[in-house]
Image (tube, rainbow, N blue to C red; front, side, top):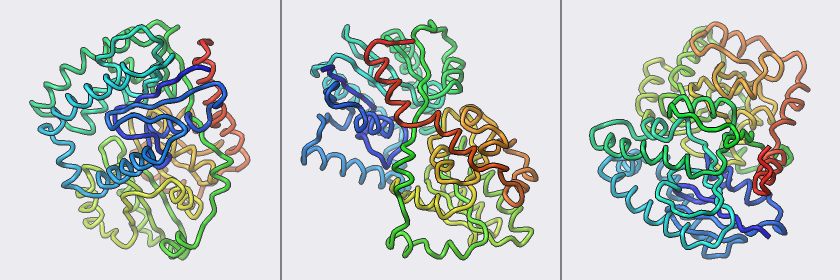
Length: 398
């Protein structure tokens, strides 16, 4: 039995979150227990699987932290301030390194490059990279840039390059993610050290999630709207939620009965609310900071259109979920979207500035054959992802 240690920078594996911890959650729950003994480490602590009640309490606390971060501006502002982050990173590296160095494992599957910044050992390291380009680029989008943060970034730039040398294998969730990352760091890595494993969704589980009384009581009024448009994305620049809102203004100008639901929050929340007010869209837009994953799926099942005009797309897990729910998907012709969406086959790729085309797709154009959606999803199943990870855990790096 191989001993696997997963790591991410903060938080715990959780199906209701996104990014590395969601992927780790999927792996932990689907890997065969007779082949692997699994542990997890992050800044917030260590878990062994199957988890006990004490560990369940840690996970629930992490979910509360995540909700607070997403819902409350002042909470988010403090915990993303350069004053706080400098101390946070110092303590985080000490904690993560101690937990990893004192763990008994055969393979470390790090899902955040920062978890191996100061790591010194000779055991096998598989590095799964989920960031939008280099970790520095990703962090600058989240935390911004100022003199104090630049000092942190300068240090991290050197550590990031050193960490790549430590990894025996580097895994990306798409070809676009791989391309974007290496363009950012401007460094050549031997091809034998790099592999793409597409993120997979659990179609069977998605199909099993039905509307319930609780959801109907909250959102049943949506059924009265002629067109229901959904976007799931945090309020950061690259998500271009503001561009989606401007498309909505064009919809409103033709007196269409529609509702737009955005699930997300972030540093641009206030400016987006101001834009909505400026464009007189308050009655057409609902902004929801957070929903558990099952309710996101339920929301998809009552909506008609999923729209994403993001840039620097590495691989959008939510687009796969939207396809699995049978939504008309309109996505930016960018990065990883091109690996999921085949234009006019299972969805539509658009120029993010072509409002007329986007309007036409929302109002008129549908897929000729909706069976194409299920065909396209066969490449992106959770079992395919698990099988590919098992290959690399067993040393089959083809």
